[in-house]
Picture 1 (cartoon, rainbow, N blue to C red):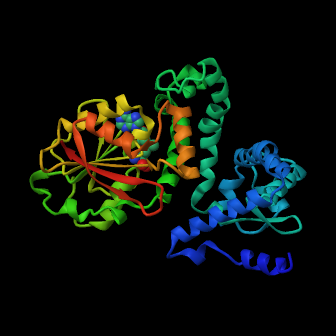
Picture 2 (cartoon, rainbow, N blue to C red):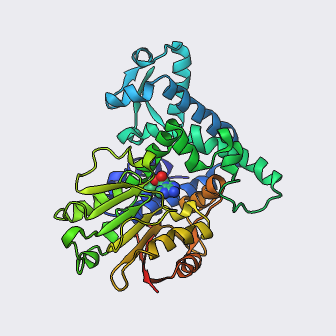
Picture 3 (spheres, rainbow, N blue to C red):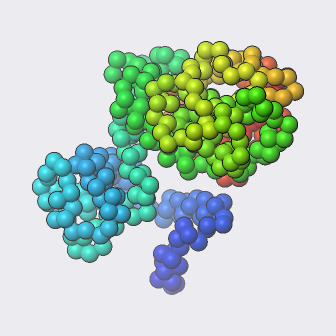
Length: 391
Ligand SMILES: C[S@@+](CC[C@H](N)C(=O)[O-])C[C@H]1O[C@@H](n2cnc3c(N)ncnc32)[C@H](O)[C@@H]1O
């Protein structure tokens, strides 16, 4: 290739900052770059990465987590440090050359940067405590994925639908279902919560693509009226985003519901947001809210469970006033993205559940006694927001 050097210089000059105003262009470029790799990599290079490199790279991440390095290095902003200085940060102590070899591996796959001989720095992927995601793979995703082929062989390759006898429960300590294990073990909950917090931050904030003014207009918030109940709302990021857009909302007009063990972790929440520990399989305690919002909740559950949760909501909705808002993936019939397909199969592995197409959503929503008003798109091709009312 005659102009290869020029091309490489151009490619090396591209940064995320070039796409500040256009996230779609950034995603298109990533897709093109991935396809470029598929075209130019030798088959052995691709397979080497898949079967040989990825497991040991993750092991290196995990070892350095156990040595407390990520935590201490990010506190000093991931600044370029010598291997000796980094070794000083490790607790318990480790051999210098062991650390050097692990750091060199991570630098070779661009997870950290080799800034000079025996010197390393963290890259932008370490901002915002992203190292906390490592534990979620160790505790949840790896072990259930490793078990999945064995589980499917044992169950005769039937598509899993039973949330109790799931692949996750097949391998988890005490054979607990995913959320039951999180409730039973604080460390499992923390690992999941750290992942959820980061993933929720990445998503397009719903008040930027859904017309929240249409909720505000006509909402009766006098006398303790509620604007929005976020069911399975984890630590309240979505209500916080709504409050950021409408800061004059009265105290108590936003309600966060999740399991007690989960809402206990919702620290630094704006005091206007009322917290109610609640199991969504039980009757909904907040009656006649303007909106009942579910984000990434139903993809954890089969249709029958989802219908039951929705029916608990239908019971307390006010006709002509209350709406159900479901933010979740709406899978395209053709051309699901890698994020969508990964999430779909991961839900099968963890919860015997699935992501849904528009047709699948229509059935669940109709079975619960609701009808769809509109499906809003997040503009990034990741999630939609389904707005529904009593049928
Ligand atoms: C995938 S997370 C989504 C969290 C949040 N809505 C978000 O998008 O960031 C699913 C949530 O459902 C909650 N959940 C699971 N079982 C529940 C139950 N029986 N009642 C209430 N919440 C539950 C979990 O604790 C978790 O916070």
